[in-house]
Length: 191
Image (cartoon, rainbow, N blue to C red; front, side, top):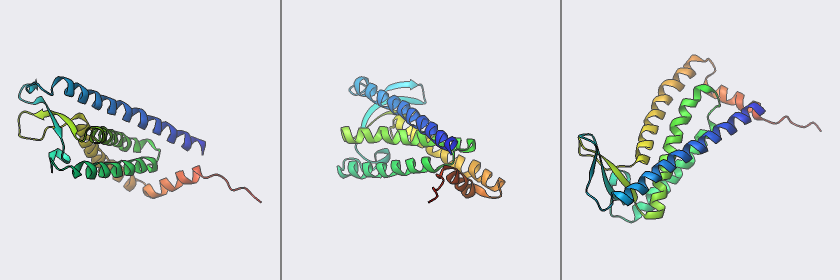
């Protein structure tokens, strides 16, 4: 009982610290871009691959529906709902080591959502600064990188690792989660 609670607490500490570091890194890069790139010409970071160009995205994902004020609120509400769902999913994951690979991508997705939500609510737009030079693609930021890489990793781990472990065990994920829940339950007091 205490072992499961202790494990959950440690996992939440990792979540908070990991998310905090990633959000801080994202917001630092956005502040730097605002200060040093805003009124300057685009810069080449890696020749032929990645450049730096400051833009403020007032639209939704990759600038979709730019220029419509209502998108700030729709996007913010959608991100808040997704963030709550991520927190619930993170909390309900079993504490076993095999599920650690699912937790790490969730931290990245959550941190990216927080970084972009912060911009939306404080500036009315998301500060973007990274662009691919080898193709015509939307300008993006570090939070976007966290969200995309986290979501792809999460999907891959969910499909291949969790599915593999479920098929490997005769009882599956549901029974393992139920066992952990039983370990957490307080013994009933007799009357």
